[in-house]
Amino acid sequence: MILRPKVRGFVCVTAHPVGCAAHVQEQIDYIRRQGPLKNGPKRALVIGASTGYGLASRITAAFGSGAATLGVFYDRPSEEDRPATPGWYNTIAFERAAKGAGLYAQSLNGDAFSEAIKQQALALIRSEMGPVDLVVYSVASPRRVHPKTGMVHKSVLKPVGQPYTNKTVDTDLGIVSDITIEPATDEEIADTVAVMGGEDWELWMQALAAAGLLAPGATSVSYSYIGPEVTWPIYRNGTIGLAKNDLERAARRIDALLKAHGGGRAFVSINKALVTQASSAIPVVPLYISMLYKVMKAEGTHEGCIEQIQRLFASQMYNGSALAYDKTGRVRLDDREMRPEIQRQIAALWPRITTETLGKFTDIQGYRTEFLKLFGFGLAGVDYEADVDPHVTF
Ligand code: NAD
Image (cartoon, rainbow, N blue to C red; front, side):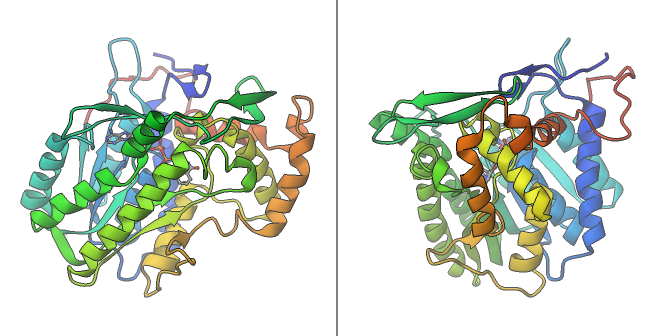
């Protein structure tokens, strides 16, 4: 099969197995170039491990610290006439590389919100790994079936209280237009908190603790975003922001649990805005990201997921360093994004962005390149004219 990108709105419905493997390898090579972490993780559970920040976390733990990893993810394998989703190919490529390097790597494809997957993970940790010293919770999902009530919660990306109008871009077509999003109902807010808030992270940590599968002094981290005021109505003060507040609430509870368990810790890291499958679905944010990329690349401060997570591990979590908390107890990896000189430039350009000026004032091309890379397209050294077998299995 010759595989080409087929972009539909903010998703690409095809993925390239060889390209995804090359994308994973690029990240492994980056971590290897940074040299080993001192006192890094030895046994890591990564929930949401197949793409974006979770995959970068798994790669950093394994190839930066020689950690055994268990990755939980939710992807679709290939079907008769369609390729798998990228996380499927990424995870196979990761496992092959990790095992090739003599590292333990096991993956569970299924719904992390379910009790069944938690029990399978616990069984694997018990029988094959031993207690974990790092748990990364990096799930980004549009829905959750609640394990206790069976209710289906769907998350929405909406403002709270009043409608929000701003510019947005169709990244595929390059058309900038105004979008007005009506505020969420109370039920939609509660649903979004149920999906993207901290309850499931807590359930995982409680299950691990109850099963005696947390190493003394274990660390747990989950990721969030704040961003500039222009996106606050849809992000920080919107439904997703309220869910992220709940994630911070959960972090405090889990931190107390881990503190009582051999002096461990849990925290939320505020990461940089980056092109991932999750962020491309948020209105307005992709336009902001394409401006951010332009400004940060010009300043030489641009980072991708792997650079962000390597910096988190190397300068905050391990190497003898200490976590540098902000006033509300979060770790800030968005420090470079939020520098006043970066944000001033974006704020000045924002009103001038139109369909006509998109190419001049933003890095829309860089955005598209990064977006396609998520699906394994546009990687150097990959022959996209070659026939490729989409049916890759573990
Ligand atoms: P992503 O879409 O790249 O990754 C999501 C991961 O979650 C995938 O591995 C997917 O398989 C997994 N997943 C989804 N539903 C699942 C389920 N039911 N069970 C098991 N696994 C499931 O997303 P991302 O952008 O890397 O986001 C990860 C975290 O980082 C999120 O909390 C997000 O809010 C946060 N974050 C993202 C950005 C950004 O700009 N992308 C910035 C800051 C923080």
